[in-house]
Length: 477
Image 1 (cartoon, one colour):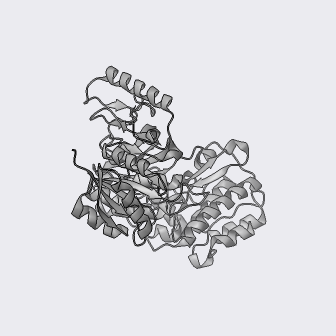
Image 2: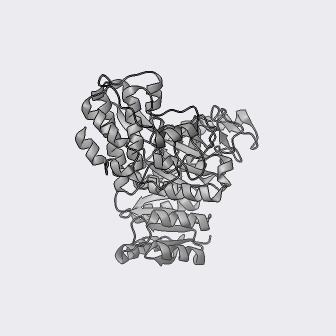
Image 3: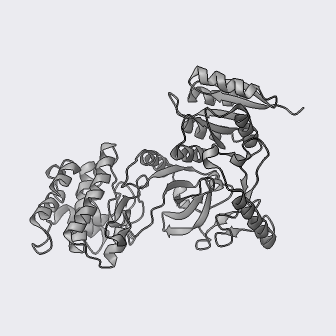
């Protein structure tokens, strides 16, 4: 008889914990070798017992199941994790899979289904509860396309670019356990990497061996620069399109920068607002590439709109300003200062409809570059984009919410007048203007007295003379 699958049960409620153990012990192929009532104890038990599978509750004291799973997968690669929850929630599923979980089950699942899930993930497959069942014809079609692809492209050393490997091209198998429609096995060509044909030389690219890219299918580069590459990608299990930002290789070698990136990304992932692009996942791959997985927002940036000389009347502009203020106000109340408010970080969905929905992006990754960068973003204590930086940012002084208010004023001025309030020939010249040159208000023909008053106060050199919070500005608008 084969060695039973060893299972660790992690659940803070004793009654649920007992029920799960009873369900597992009904199956001779499974044995419960340990239990824990919180995430910290779970990690210690994993290190001591080295179980094959962990059944992990999502909501627990001290450390939740998502963070516990992330740490367990860092310390014990071979241990599989199935998340257990009392309700169906796509966000929980997204977080669980991103943390490294191999499956997801409801707590009230029948015993034979739970055991099937354990066997499936132990075989290296993925398990999703019935809410996320899969169409079998689609699965067979994907398998056939993938097999044809392997026949065409040969050995395991071949690189498969995004033009050759569509998102749906995967090998998918089902098992014959009860609830088999829940089981997916997704793989790629052995040793193959997935990279963009637009950026062959980049060290920040999709690689099959990265845990991140085992979960996301590359749909192509949507942005790149000296600091990072941004990919449009699809989560394989959720069929969810996301944006994956991968930090450029040279920055991954700077420990302090990576540490700040991870810390700020954690903060960004805690923000949940209709006008802020969500952050789903972040971390560092085994190849030491820091990554950030965000909501994919389709639409032009405000910078692109302004470059096309699209002039917004004041009423339409104010509607956008209100949405941006809502996003920033929420972030400030959560203790987050954006520090890089500019038109390029404002995305407008449904712009052509006349009622665009605004999304603020790029929380969690400070822009770091050199003075020669044409985008005017520099490295060191002075961080931001000089055309929109507050005087205190330009001088490398501590910043708070009022710095974002100044940057907001710069953005609003540009939308109304067609150009930023201060633009020097160089970054240093622009810094000097922010610190020393008086703000020139728009003319009476360009905007109302009300908006002119708001801009004047937002763009005060002294932070103490600006609005103390964004709610004041919104009430005036």
